[in-house]
Length: 257
Image 1 (tube, rainbow, N blue to C red):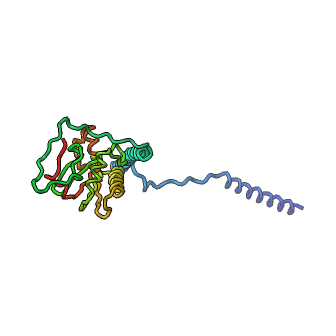
Image 2: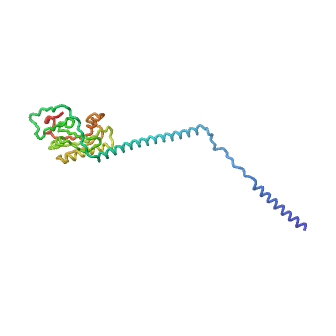
């Protein structure tokens, strides 16, 4: 009996000891890990600060360049929209006859005719101002003027008669479309081409040989008058029709001022 009691007490003591060990193990805290400091860099390290400053400067420069490019694109887009609107209105508005530049207040001055090469009556010079009708050694140059951004080939009757009579017997005809632009650009290029093309069509419909016609265009420059004035620009927006016809060459016709 005593032996059983001792055995029970020993077993109970062992259980208590085991529980105490387990409870003590659960209540203990693990030690936190500590950094060894080998990768630390001082916050005010000069090299690190300079590197960060260089990166900030590079980002600012890139942002400035992007803003400048965006502003340039916006300006170009606005100009393109403006020119597109002008061309669209020019192609859709009703036709308006181009105003002729004022004629100089001088009476026509006849040039003596060559004694042996008098021009036939059908080739008499029309009563056109000198800026619209000029002679050369090979024939004549007739100019037709346009309103701003317009391409319609609209003629007064005297100019139409002069063209019809001048193209008869022409060896060659050169049609040159002009604008009043100071800078070459796609919109004015199209306008210059369209002016020359419409003049060519009119000439063919009025007796000119299409095989003898050449076309040129000048979207900027090649001005006839001072482009800094409104009157000068109105004369620079033109089509020049250079007709190589010896019957109309210098010395065979009468000019009008």
